[in-house]
Length: 326
Image (cartoon, rainbow, N blue to C red; front, side, top):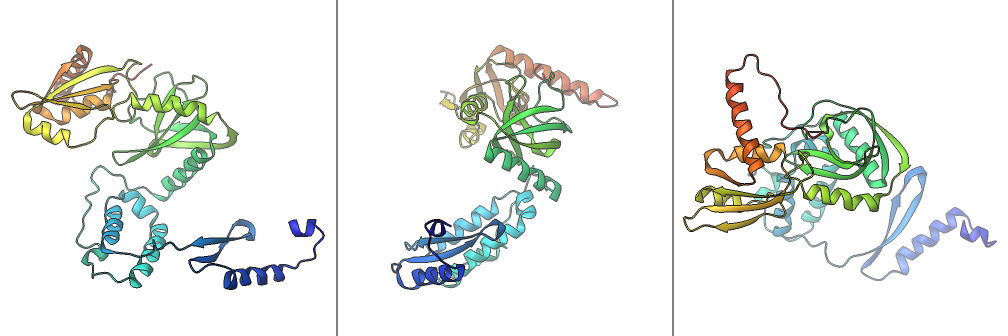
């Protein structure tokens, strides 16, 4: 188009011939000309450099297989055709590389239990693609309805509402979208699996300005659940020695600090809000953890202990959400 604008008479066939000549005669040894087909039959020619990174060794094979091993079941199954393309590319490199025979290549010697994961269906992947598009392009979404509430949404929240999606969050085998409710300017996380209906728009929002707001909000949470209020507490927990060593070896919160006591027990310090997920996580350690502070966390913990006892006697059992924020 630019040549034609300058008055030059050039046919498409001639351009292709010239590009072939560029690829055959005018590139350095480590360079190659690649054709990438685009939408609407557009063609993009790219000069790529081969810097030697294509050599495959056994460490690379194991790295690929470990990544494949830890992949969530819902993604591995729902996007199998895409993963197979990458596997074929990897296999082509493997066949042309001088590496030892790797018994793990077939994956038979590795196992992922996929504990606490959801097997996502085609409908979920369609929804995930829609949300990915909105997040990537900073486009407003309208949330029409949700089924269930795994994150303790605000009691005052009504559907439908306008939502500014800022981040995709992966946590405990599930995908969430973090953003801001347009009407209230409040931060909100939504479980993608529980979003029933959404409507995409082409309207943009101030992404950079709101990103710092959502980042601050996420750092104040333990996990992804909505905090009961806007307070950030100095949470101190004491773990029995063996449990404490196990806890210390894992990642729980960006602010976590640890102190070994004279008796061998471990104290954990976290700067975060209080939410349903924190209470549930503390219960996970059963009789091997004690809340040192704050008092409000002790109160909510005792409240849930009473709730557990009542539930064991209840007939029928009913759902009781823990301290949903207003």
